[in-house]
Length: 185
Image (cartoon, rainbow, N blue to C red; front, side, top):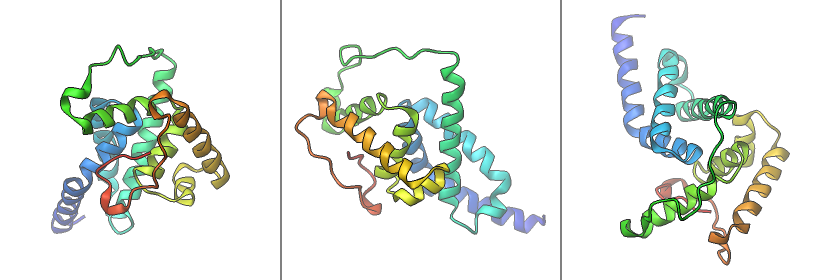
């Protein structure tokens, strides 16, 4: 590859990371529930995408890298499941987020609720309500049937609605693409 072409691709990749990096970290954080693990997963995903950037920069690079993030999370979960057992953290064990304001309290509530879902359920909910993907797009991204996406989403939302934190609340529709800065259920 010519030097000028490599420099152009490097500039495109850097611009992609600058504009979409935070969105990828938020996606990974919703999947993992841990900001440090999320940053590691995104870093690893970007490392995997960089050598192939000349092929993916013409298509939809966000979809490509998002798929890598989801796969990285799934791989991490498989490795972790064989070695560690998650402790059930009740609300009393966590730091009280109320002093940080309502936004942080809501974020903590949502992250805590997402940890109670299975990996597939969490992935489908995050891709549907955070990434604002359609059921068909989620099915294509995860390599599963649309019916599986629908039933998984239905089960996950039923679990979330049954949580004491969400009793009496009504679910909101997926956020518009321009208003992705808040997580809604």
